[in-house]
Length: 207
Image 1 (cartoon, rainbow, N blue to C red):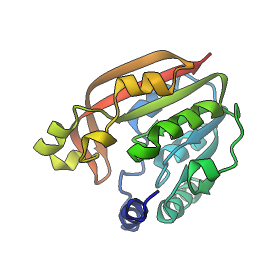
Image 2: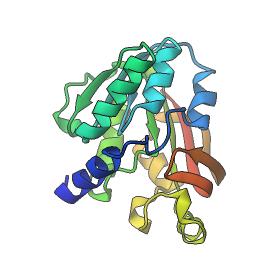
Image 3: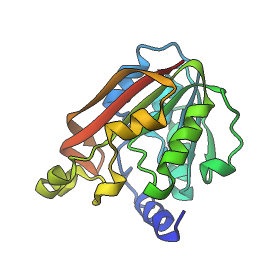
C-alpha cells in the first residue's frame, strides 16, 4: 500500500475531532439488531466508532487498519466506553486471521485502494464461517455528482475507488444476498460525511 495512502489517513486521524464521529453508522446499527452477538471483524476501522458500538452490544470485536493514529483513537474510544477491542495494525494479508473464524465481517466505508480491493474482499469472505454474514456500506459509482454538489459529503474523488454492485456480486459470490442495493443516503457522521450521497449496501449470508 502506498505511503501517500497511509499518510492521508494518519493525517486525518491525527486531528483532535473524530473524523466520522463517535456514533455508529446507521445501516450497521440496524443490521446488527437482526443478529445474535458473536465474533465480528471490522475492516479499515479507523477511529473505532462502529467497533465500539458492537462491543457495547455484546460482540467479541476484532478490527484492523493501516493507521496507527486511527488505532490510538479507537482504543481511546473503547476505554471511554469501558469495552475491549482486539485491534491489529497492518495490511490484511499480513495479519493472522483464521479462515471461517468470524460470524460477521463488517465493511463500513472501507474503500481499499483499487489495486488490492478485490483481493481484500475475497480474503475477508474466507474469514466468515458458513452461515455467517458480511455487512457492507460504501459509496457507489454514482457518488461523484453528489460530492461535486456538496463536498461535505466526503468520499473518494475518483471513479475507480467507488464500488459497484457487480463487483460485490463477484467478490462475495459465496454469499446469498439478503440486501444488495444502491440508493441515496443521508449521512451525519462527524466532520467528513455530511449530506446526501450515493451508496451501495450489501448484507450477505455465507453458504
